[in-house]
Image (cartoon, rainbow, N blue to C red; front, side):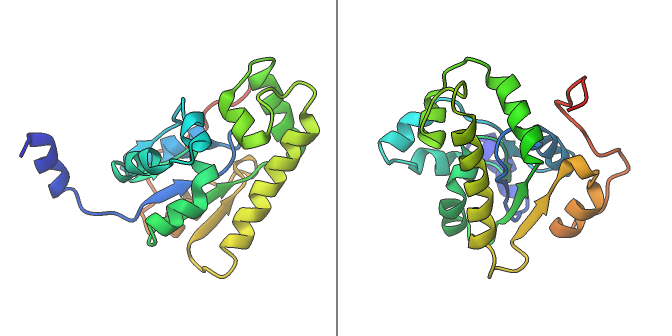
Length: 192
């Protein structure tokens, strides 16, 4: 057995925490916060459109088995599969004012084409598809809340724009509040 596996065996088995908010809702901030709470965070995973197109998400679930937490795309799309695969997991849905979210995603994507965007939104570019993207954002949030409605204690909904930080997150996870300020990553220089 190699040294890495020996070390992993000594790490206590934790409840997995999956951040399932759409991109541009505070995913990077949540990843940093979970890292500060000593979770091993799996971040965004590019090149995943082919897994969805082939209806083969097993390689993605395998990647999740190696970490304690995840954030950003494509993970939110898989929230039901993740709940079935990891029944003791906890989920965090980050939400944001729709207008601010749309403005942020437009500024971020600009005219770039995304193969994963085709899978998630039905179009790989946001240009000319604002309503489509906003509809998919709303549908995701509604689907998550409906799915977890009768699963108490499994879902925390956070809007990081409202200043919610360590207290809500640590209470949900059963962790002590760290002595460091709650992170705020990718904050735009200009007000929304």
